[in-house]
Amino acid sequence: MTPPRSYVIIGGVAGGMSAATRLRRLDESARITVVERGEHVSFANCGLPYHVGGVIDDRDSLILQTPESLAARFALDVRTRTEAVSVDREARAVAVRDLRTGEQTSLPYDALILSPGASPVRIPVPGVERGLVLRDLADMDAIIAAAKDARRAVVAGGGFIGLELAENLVHAGLDVTVVEMLPQLLRPLDPEMAQIVTEHLRAHGVTVRLGSALRAITESGVEIDGTADRGDGAEQLPADLVVLSVGVRPESSLAAAAGLELDARGYIIVDERQRTSDAHIYAVGDAVLKQRADGPASPVWLAGLANRHGRLAADAIAGRPHRAVPALGTAVIGLFGLTAAVVGRTERELREEGRELRVIHTHPSDHAGYYPGASALALKLIVDTRTDAILGAQAVGGGADKRIDIIATAMAGGIPARGLADLELAYAPQYASAKDPVNMLGYVDDNLLDGEDSVQWHELDARLAEGWRLLDVRTEQEHQDAAIPGAELVPLDTLREHAESLRGERVIVHCKVGQRGHTAASLLRQYGVTVANLDGGYTTWRSGTASRVLAPTSA
Image (cartoon, rainbow, N blue to C red):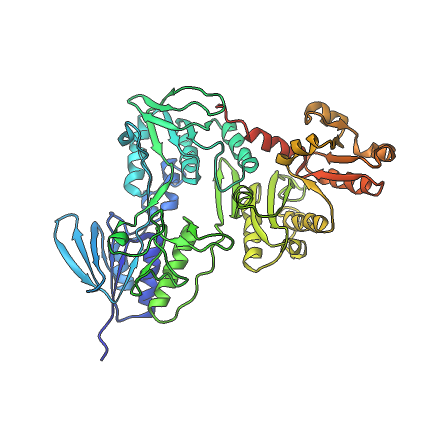
């Protein structure tokens, strides 16, 4: 009789527990041991900020499984408050230490899965020990306790977790300032899209300081750098509570000590079956590099991928391997009722790589405008000029999650940008328009493929310097309310009267969001005018140019 195999999993939560439970389903006789350094092996870490703000009222609802429940259902030996000390690859054994008693034991394995995760970065500034972080339930409890007696909070870091915490600290009754070293929030978005989020936060009482680095945490608050463009000196911000959310680093010291292959940043390198440089050791989760669908392998800190890769590692160990699909980096955040979502690469990073791109901005309503409750939606599509492949998309506003999910699915299926026009999507006026916003992206791409010219907001100044004229085809009232400097007003309904006089000219047209600009460009082209449409119109231009301002602005 074949002796039962022994599997050891270091680290729980999404990746580790998915691997453990999948292994049990595939091998009833195996000895499966899960080693977790913290108090809880299976909890909803994505829900932690929302208990801080009271949105999730019941703390226990965040604890998904306990060692006892996992033992009863899956016959798992789960050891919390137990630290993996070292891995002996030759002997195939893990030395572990019980953090309660100090006792050290050895766990043999036939296969080992590493799921150590990533830990919050504590930047080397004076007083950093006063800053709180959020990784587990104990961290969450510490933030809640500190918030009870606090009136003002500073959140250092404008990424997903930092902004979720900022929102929930507002819900908890605090005055909140977000300090971000970069000139924008949410780096996975391009600046003109992130600007919409920034303005929404400010409208809900959050003070946002961009282009400002944390210098120190003091007894009474924080000290930050002034903005780079103004050359301001240090500034003091009062705060009773300071939370650090400035990034994470992989918990890969155990892997490094075991001699496993890591990249320059310390992330564990795995193959398409989650196997490390040691054939008997697998790795999943936030400490692992993911192969990207378009671009180099990189960290992707997403719970869905951790769960999927945990399952893939278990499948490979059990002799039924599947290849990991390259990651798209699909993510979403909700802030004070506004949704922002993203998939794929940004225009910024692709242009830095020298890629030839076609970029589309649209600003539809999330559903039919005549049906009550329609709200604004900003969409951005990034397309490979040569192949028409979708490289990325961003959405901010009503229905953003739905549209990004559709585009992510299209990307996974290899549907080109033009093909978005042909997607048959569910329609009723309370859910969408007869031509869904995703379909409209395909229509715009089709127009550009057929030879229409568009200009991005960040390209406008260069075109005007080359002698192009800028025509505003909106109404006179719209032009009076807000105009791009140097734009000549020629309302669309009067454009035919002026078309002949523009023959032979080089003209950029713009409207509010691009739709009327497309009509104007189509008309002028037939009169022999060299014409381009300002992509996304005045709305995108305004967000983009506003995002260039690094000076601190508060609500």
